[in-house]
Amino acid sequence: MNTEPKEIGMRLKGLREALDMTVEEFAQSCNIPVSEYLSYESGEKDLTISTLKGIAITHNIDLSILMFADEPRMSSYFLTRKGKGLAVKRVEDYNYQTLAGGFNNRKADIFEVTIEPKADDIEIHHSRHTGQEFNMVLEGRMLLQINEKDLILEEGDSLYFDSSLPHGMKALDGKKVRIIVVVL
Image (cartoon, rainbow, N blue to C red; front, side, top):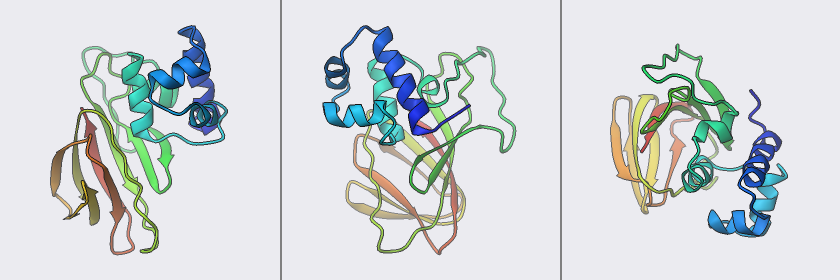
């Protein structure tokens, strides 16, 4: 499995070509400026989970295919052992492990996300995507900004929200944070 931007870019190009779409048509269908899309397809720029999810929803494919080139295989259950989820680093300081990527026709994308600490003066990256999201803190403390409101979540805390609202997170206390993220 390779999750480098160039590999994901190649999968995007393959999807676009399989759909027999021009760069312009594909970018427009995903509401992405053409120049930005070209930087994704060439692997020059990394994509966020929310951008990948939007592309997957728009073109009715599984998010795992774009992220990991891994077709879902299981239809009755899918077991992920501790620390064995397919891993990908999508956004600076966020590391994702998919926990259900091998399950066919799943209704949610489930990740264990590790957020590395960063300097206080670094801005929080905000995402928006259709649907809803659930976050639960497994380890550490974090600041979660949602729709310009600051929320502090500690170990055991959880939050369910409309993911079309701008949201972003940051580790607190100079320590990493581990959370479960369910994207519906």
